[in-house]
Length: 126
Image (tube, rainbow, N blue to C red; front, side, top):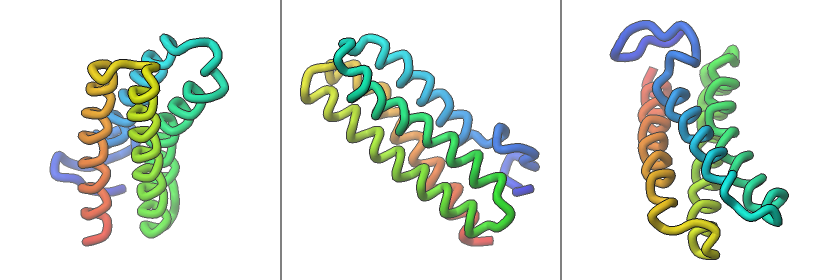
């Protein structure tokens, strides 16, 4: 469907940004397993929902018929990424996790965000 620098992309699963988003969501699920039980319907739920929303919106946008729809879903993924960062930062501030534990997730957020912005720029140019 879309041509990237490395060749033809045949599925959203071929997109590095989707792959990174999936890894980020997976790591968030692992991280939140350590949270106290009273946070299951609070912070755990919020972190997991925001994390899952990132690759899900990338995939959903890819499947849309029009480029503008794809771009809109990528922007939603960006919003979910910022929401996730905020939840992780808050979890550290209220001592559900340490700053050291938060850092790898925040680094993944930054890396995924860069790829999202690059994909958005590429789609907006064509």
